[in-house]
Length: 98
Image (cartoon, rainbow, N blue to C red; front, top):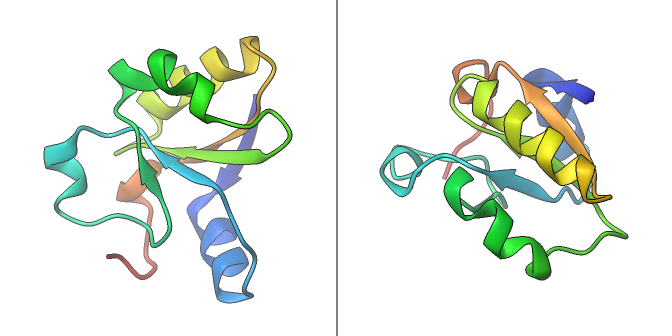
């Protein structure tokens, strides 16, 4: 499983890179703030939202601490998606939030 730190994600965004970020936290958790441009797909819905994802794109998966996102990353990898888990999740995030 590929991994990226929260700081590496922050630097990519600051440098203007277009990232496809999937926030797999529950809706109530996301209301407290999320990474700009992140799309919320709660973990329980990832399987059903797969048709909406493009296997030609790269995705970064994030949750609160990195545990649920690692589950989602492994799951999506098993279906051929190019996904990377953000280690430490939002607990490690020190960047801008929306």
